[in-house]
Image 1 (cartoon, rainbow, N blue to C red):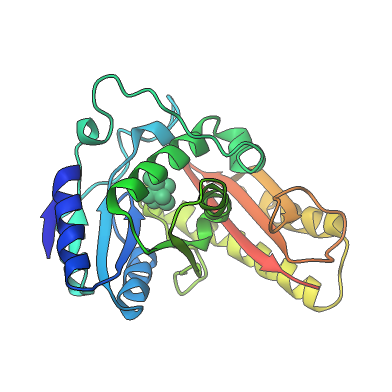
Image 2: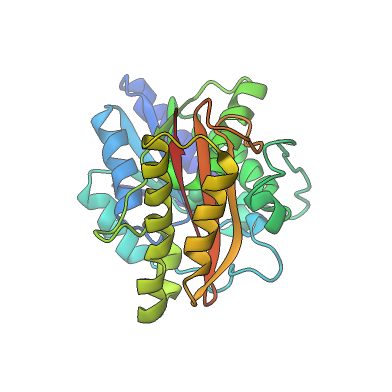
Length: 281
Ligand code: PAF
């Protein structure tokens, strides 16, 4: 497995892979891997081609009071985990390699960036769209793999690819959960044992909503209220939002008539966790 620190070395690696007739399969990450990341890498590997993973904690997507400085980082651990699933190369740039002196361009996917996490994290999705477009231009992947836990991010990147005619296929991958249902996240390390136990309320509430829809509930307001009350009943949870939105536009819906996303965000201590589930009539 090769460790590439510069844009030029990635371009050179990509040229070598293509010369051997290999497709480029790309998994963009911020590192501190868990099973969710590994599932993306395994999928990229199983699809054939050369697999490249980027590890870059992107300062542009963190607000001034967010966790950029303390975001967990452990390159050596990540390197071993990536190697264990057969990754061919890691792109591990310094901040100055991605944002050299004088960098000033920003990418904004206007409407999809406004609701849900966009409301409570102003500028976040501009940071994501900007770095993902840069990474796509550097890596020039045939396919790129994104987890559905960050569903809004996935929709924004799909729209970016469509709007900018980027020649990459976006492959959405299912949420990977702990045995008790908690969605895997690098931020779960911030949780105390009590908060960790309390955080399962997110999955349990979404499961409840799934069951309601399966039993015939179509009223989005009733679903939202039910999920909200369940999370609010957990004393260690501080809700950021509970929303029932169209799975494509991310705009609120009144009834479950098309694929619909139930999305939640809540703080447990200092950790802000998100989760979601897709429901269909
Ligand atoms: O999902 C993430 O880890 C990040 O938002 C991404 C897509 C790697 C961009 O920094």
